[in-house]
View 1 (tube, rainbow, N blue to C red):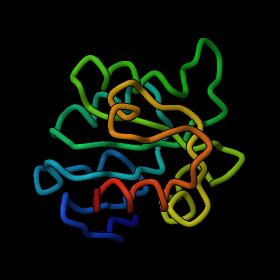
View 2 (view 1 turned 45 degrees about the horizontal axis):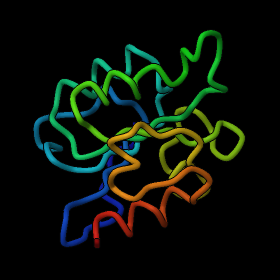
View 3 (view 1 turned 60 degrees about the vertical axis):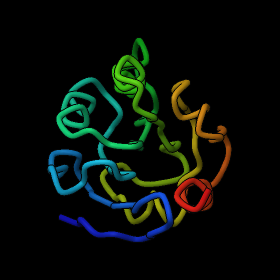
View 4 (view 1 turned 90 degrees about the vertical axis):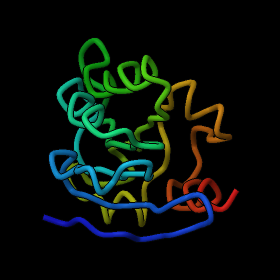
Length: 131
């Protein structure tokens, strides 16, 4: 199960993890890219550690937006959150999300950091940690 740092800037690190269940206190304040779906169970794990931002796979969004439910949960705690399109990157594969992911959904906290939909995830997050 992958967990690795892929970028470092003045404002923090970007850490890839194939599952949000691997988030730990050592990731506090960092940007996490998780291969997990953006559902409520993933949101619960993400809220366990105060992160700067966290990204998931939208898993096709699903019934009643279940695949992106974590974004609202994160917003309620002023944590930036987003997803990449399942059409741009494989679910469960954070390296593929980093290499090919295109942002599909964002919460308002992520927009306040200057992120926008339809950006390549890697480029957007490198700008974020170097802003």
